[in-house]
Length: 224
Image (cartoon, rainbow, N blue to C red; front, side):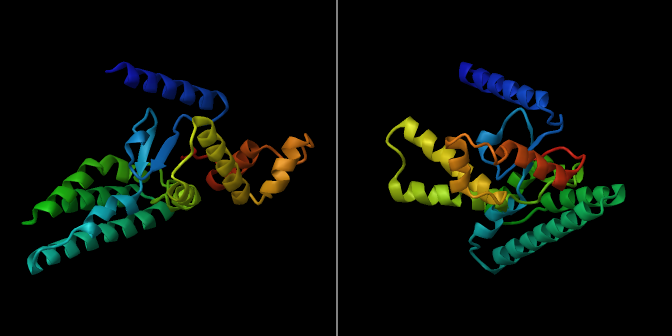
């Protein structure tokens, strides 16, 4: 393991320890689109919409390949429906059946090299895709996070980024504050005024986040 990887793991360990010391549960889970920066010390749940995109992007070369692609993709979304139904009413019998169906589907042999490779990728992601069976409160996709970061991505494409690290930090911080205020029904301009003038009438955003998480998840672990 390189020194860079060691620093990364040490940083994640400190971060996780800090969260635990502030009352976050031990079963914290990161839910993402599978980008490699989320390969961390935390358990990881994979977005089903992102995982299924390689199937939709395939360009079949003939009718047989198209039929195989369409059938495999249809089965994937049938599994998605089954998992979604399971999350609303989980049972051990349903969990076992979904795992069995997934394993049978993902090991299907097709005479289409690119499709077979896509199935191989999904097979390797099995544990992350099916983690929801152990934690039914998890989401099947991360569309909410995708929508929240869309403004930032648009600004980056238009401006080409910031000139200095300080500018990047300011942009990211204020974008995050603005989005978080919007999610919790807080006026961003009034929030800034409250903090700059030291009025203190508006609660800390961390408190609002904790309250919302408690409402949504009850006694379950938080998902990120």
